[in-house]
Length: 238
Image 1 (cartoon, rainbow, N blue to C red):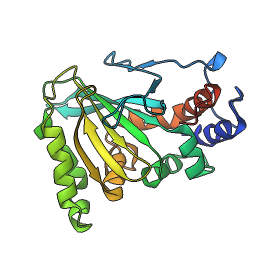
Image 2 (tube, rainbow, N blue to C red; image 1 turned 120 degrees about the horizontal axis):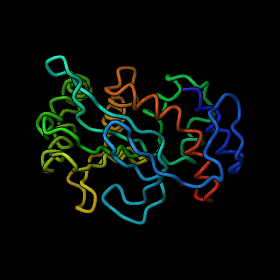
Image 3 (tube, one colour; image 1 turned 180 degrees about the vertical axis):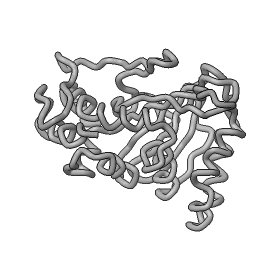
């Protein structure tokens, strides 16, 4: 998680290729590059402009990628991969600075920053019902306590409209104004809900203290410096 402060400095510095502090060196030449999750081969583009049920939007930049696993009869089954895309300039404006810890990365959960989770399914063991059950385990009690049960139900209904199977991908997009949507790319949003509490909750599943994929969370923290540098180098404020 040591890269977050340097990422914010790079966003402010106008795309300097320097690493800053203890951050890992960003890719040379400040050119966008995709990532491939090594255990599944799932590919993630360096930036996306189609999300939130639309196309041609401001670029969001890839922060990190990892695999979600579940133990079944003693074996770790790869259920899906998840990658985080973020509005780099928005992250700088919202966070200002950070100390490079996992806790600093977690500040993105409550920040007014546009960001998108891209999930690519790997296992036949996962479907919409099981995905929603896993979200229930993580979020249902908090959503009920906050009076957000109906909003949560609407979002889960959106997942239920997508035939989740190996190779299928979904986007969970969050706006800076606190709306969350789910879609299968190119097929339009199947649910859009306005709820900052739900946005924060869904991000907590992957960025929070009990993140379901420690590998993904670590990758997201480490990759943020390069993502912000690439955004500045391209002249796009996100």
